[in-house]
Amino acid sequence: SIPLSFFGGIGGASAKGILVKGSNYLEALAKTGCVVFDKTGTLTKGVFQVLETAPEGMDAQTLLGWAAQAECYSGHPISQSLKAAWSGRVDADRVTDVEELGGFGLTAQVDGHAVAVGNRRLMEKLDIQPAEPQKAGTVVYVAVDGVYAGCILLGDVVKEHAVQAIRGLKAEGIEKTVMLTGDADAAARQVASQLGVDEVHSQLLPADKVRQVERLLQERKDGRLLAFVGDGINDAPVLARADIGIAMGALGSDAAIEAADVVLMDDDPAKIALAMRISRRTLRIVY
Ligand code: ADP
Ligand code: MG
Image (cartoon, rainbow, N blue to C red):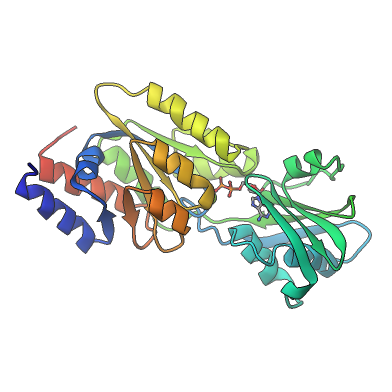
């Protein structure tokens, strides 16, 4: 039978915008020792700004146009920023054969031209030689009909409460914080050092994230559990694999919310430490 206090804990959490899907997850929250984060949209705002463009044989707006058109159906944060930076208007009627490749980017036909938009790994996959960017950040490469067309430098910003979120977890007795990302190494390290995350792994494909979580699950000690926090469609497998999956509700994909055990309604990562505090108070567990 479930102690009555569990319902008080779940109710108290929901009043703070933390949706706990069952009493077993309240108990798991209280026993968490390691918290693993996805970067983009979870610790960072996921609202990228175009900082610079380096087009090859075309002007900047033409480069942005190819990218924005190809991305017209994508819900990825990178897609939003490319569309916002282009002065033109996206016309979905001109776009066909869209193929989104998780952790790489996407390919599509725009006005009958084969367009590829994504990271360095996507270019390598397509046997295209991209230029080396001069600055650190999230870089999106574009190719048209198999020819390199240029790159776009994007900057993401950490969430206002992200520093507090990591500090709050330490205060709650969390032993280790980890950040996993498909983004480039330089961009990942910058965010990790800004936030004081203990461990960072970059350039991961969705399957690599699952492998990293499985490795961290092996390292658990003294009955302490592992929580994963994410927001994207790609995060659903890891959310399911972790002892406790926490999804960002407002920005999060339906797949992530479905796969999660706990949903943060307002996407504030500082709510994770609060959820743990509520659950430990309910269960009277102290670390
Ligand atoms: P994160 O792990 O930080 O949440 P994702 O797994 O969503 O990031 O994406 C990893 C990387 O794959 C991105 O940094 C980007 O380089 C590339 N990428 C993914 N989706 C797209 C897209 N729609 N357009 C361009 N690049 C993309
Ligand atoms: Mg993400």
